[in-house]
Each structure stands twice: as structure tokens, then as C-alpha cells.
Length: 248
Ligand SMILES: Nc1ncnc2c1ncn2[C@@H]1O[C@H](COP(=O)(O)OP(=O)(O)OP(=O)(O)O)[C@@H](O)[C@H]1O
Image 1: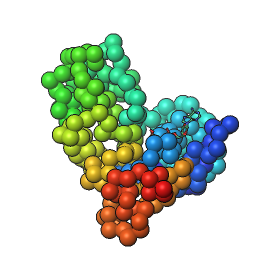
Image 2: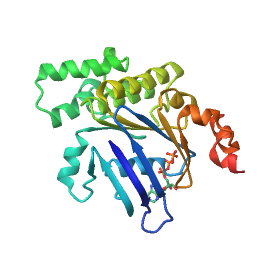
Image 3: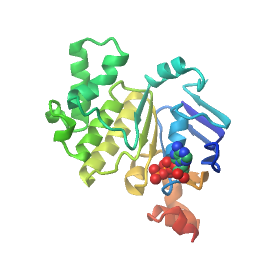
């Protein structure tokens, strides 16, 4: 469903931000990308979403090469993608309901009644059906994040990209969101990538984990493999240390 092969990326004037990264995500799989701040995780997601083009290597989604230079094909492809980016703000002049309905109104031919059913089911899934009529300014930051998640999954996408989905959430909301990502991936037979710093929440739902450091993939395996590893770097990483501490 998602395949990156030896992907490199650099902003013209800087050193490599993503260097020789190969990664694959199968149908029904959640793959986690973890690592310290600035190691290139968000850039990697932007490459998968077609928002950035690799300088070397190849990327394919749903079995076809990403059409980086064809804006129309990219737009069509994105209707099958759900994206929750770190600063994925809600539209402040629209109610919570309208925010979640937005992609459905833009990209589908669903009737008003069908849109209402989908929006309310997604808001129920994130535990926020009761704030549908509120404006973003009337809900908390953590609630806004859950609304953004409901909006990301509104179109029941085949590919889901989540950048720090647990940030700003209390432990109960974190569990709800983690389970929701798992359930949506399973029920839609989708491929999901979760970028996160949170080892506990992420290991609980991920099928496979890539650990990045300074633009490269430094370690990979199932959560069970990583938890059982004798490698001192991985042992410290899974205990919550950052990779740079591990190298110190
Ligand atoms: N538009 C840009 N121009 C130049 N450099 C950039 C740009 N965006 C990001 N970078 C640099 O790319 C590197 C990787 O950034 P990226 O956001 O991918 O890291 P990250 O691992 O997602 O970090 P965090 O966990 O803090 O979100 C950083 O050094 C950052 O400063």
C-alpha cells in the first residue's frame, strides 16, 4: 500500500533531511516512525503524502508511483488519504460538524443526510458527538485534535498518516485515539503510518516500528522484537530515552 525505496530528500541548501530510507506498509498494517525531534519524521510523512518530492529513490502508493508532478492526479490520490498533521488546525469560522463534513462536501456526492450520518459516526468514534454544533474556539485543544482526527478519517481513507496524534491529549483520550487508529486501520483494511514520541501508546497499536536518527533509519522491527532486543541502543530507546541520549 505504501512503499518507499532508498528515498533521499534535502532542501536545496541544507544537508539530507531524509537519507536512504526504505519503508513499506501493507494493507491492514500500522507502521510507526519514531525518533527524536528534528530527525526527519514529518518530512518523511510529507514525502509519502506527495507534498514533497524525493531527490532520489522512489515512492509508491496503492501500487503506483506517486505522481509528484501531476497536481490533478495527486489531488485525486489524496481523496483516498487521511492526514493528521502536527499543526492541522480546524477552520475557525466553521462549527465542529462543518469541519468534519468539509472533505465529504468537497470530494464526494453524498446527500446531506448521508453526510450527517458519516460526520456523527466519526464524531462519536472520537467521543465528541455532543460538541458537533460548537465552534473550535469553544472546545479545548485536546478536543480540537480529536475533531481534526475525525476530519482526517471522514472519507474512510485507504491510507492514513498521523503526525503526533497523541500530543496534547490526556491519558484516557490518548488510549481512545490509539484504539481508534487501530480500529479504523482494521475495519477499512487501510495502511497507516503513525509518527510519535510516545513509546507506550505507539507500541500498543503498531505492527512494525522504524526508529529514525539524523535522517536515517537506525533500527526496525515489531514492538515485540524491539522490546526483546539485547542491543543497548534499542533497550534505552524503548525505555523512553531519546536516540541522542542513547548515543551520548
Ligand atoms: N521548510 C524547511 N526548510 C528547511 N529545513 C526544514 C524545513 N522543514 C523542516 N526542516 C528541517 O528538517 C529537519 C527535519 O524536520 P522534521 O520536521 O521532518 O523533523 P521531525 O522528526 O518531524 O521533528 P519533530 O519531532 O520535532 O516534529 C529539521 O532539521 C528541520 O529544521
